[in-house]
Image (cartoon, rainbow, N blue to C red; front, top):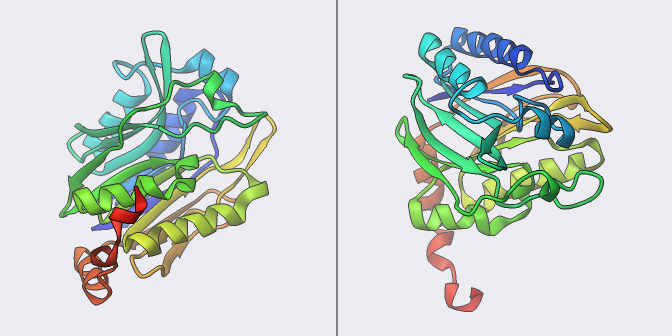
Length: 262
C-alpha cells in the first residue's frame, strides 16, 4: 500500500477553503498512485479554540461529507483530524474514510492538552475509547497530537489487536519540535510498527506549527520526511511483510512482564 502525508496550513474558520486544499492534495497524491492520504489535526476549522467553538460542525453536513465525496471521486482513502459537534459537546476527532467514501473508523481525542494558553479541556469533551481498523491488508491505529506522549495508548492496540500502523494527526507547535520527532520515532520503535505522522505548518492565533511530518517504518527508519515550515506531500510504501519480519526477529512482545506493570 502506498500512503501519502499532507503537511498543510489552514485558513482559520474557513472550512470551504480548507476543503479545497484537501481536494488539491488528494488529487496530487492520487497522481502518484497513493491509496491513502493522511492530514493533520482540526483542518476544517484550524487549531484555535475560539474558531473551533464558533465553527465546529456535526458530521451530517459540511466538511466530513465533503471528505467522503473527494474520496469517492478520486478513489483514495482519507484520514483527517476534524471537529465533531455532537449535541452540546465538541470533540477533537479523527475520521477514516475509505476509497468508496464510507466512514470506516472514527476516533475522539482521549488525551486533551490542558495547558495554558491552549487549554483544550475548555473547548472539547474527551473521547473514552481508542480506535483501530483493518484496511488494505494492515491494521491501523488512530491517534491525535498530544496522544504521542502516552505510550500505553499505542502498546495496547498492538498487543490486543495486532495493529501494525499508527496514524497521528497533529497541530504540534515549534517550541517542542524535537519532542514531536523523538516521540513519533519512539512509538514506532517500541511497537515495531509504522508511524505515519501528519503535522500542521503555518500559524493559528499565537501558535506556530512545526511541520516535520514523517513516515517511520517498524525498524525506526524514517523513510519519508517533510520540512519544518513548508506545505508538502510525502509518500512511502507500507509492507505487512516488513512488520512481520521485524517482530519475528526480535519478539519483544513475548518478553513483556505484564504481571509487573499493573
